[in-house]
Amino acid sequence: MTEIKTTMTPEEKFDAIANLKEKLEDNFVALGELLSEIKRMRLYRFRGYDNFKDFVEAEYQLSGSLAGKLASTFDLFIEDMDIDEMSVKEIGFERLQLIKPMIQKADWEVREEWIKKASDTPTNELREEIKEIRKQEKEENMDMKKVFIDQYFEKMTTWFNCSKAELNFKLALFFQDADLDDIKKVVRDRQREFEQSTNQ
Image (cartoon, rainbow, N blue to C red; front, side, top):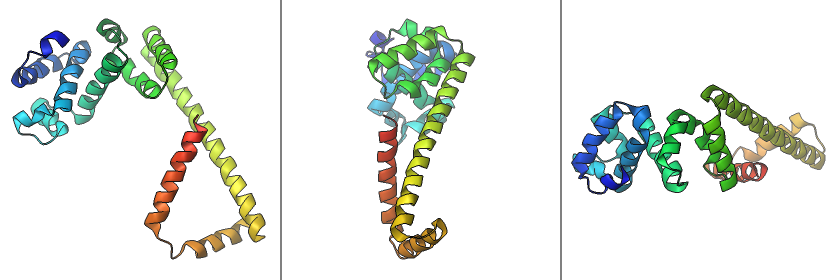
C-alpha cells in the first residue's frame, strides 16, 4: 500500500477509503495510512471541507473519533515504531487501541514489552490487565494527593494555630476578592507539575 499510495491522486485516495472501510478490521492499516496522509496534508480541502472531522463524517459516515484512531494507530505503530504491517495486523485494531495509551510516552523497552504482550494475550485478558494497572496507578496517585493535603493542613493549622474548620474560614476570607482566572491557571500548572512528579 505504501508504494502505491504515492502515485494515487487525491480522488483515488478518497475512493480507496470507501472500499477499505467495508472491512475495517482487515484493512485498518491501509485505511489508517490513507487517513493519516489526508489529515496531515489537509487533502480534505480538495472536497471543500475546512477540517478532517467534517470530511470523514460527511463523506464516509465514519466518526471523527474513529478516523483519528485509525490515523494515529498507523502513525504510532507503523511510522514511529517501524513495526511491520503483518505483525500489526496480527495484533489487531482492538488490542492496539488497548495498549496505545500505555506506550505513547513510554521508552522503547516498555513499548516492546507491550507489543509482545498484545501479540500473546487474548483481548479480554489484556483489557482486564490494563484496567487493573490503571486502577492501581489511580490509587497510588490519590494516595500521594492525600499525603500532600494532610501535610498542607498540618502546616497551615500550625501556622495559624487553629482548627481545619477555622482554617477554611480564613482561606475563604483570603480568596473572596482574588482573581479566579489567575488562581485557576496557577492551580492547573501546579497540578500538572505534581502529577508529573508523582508519575515518574
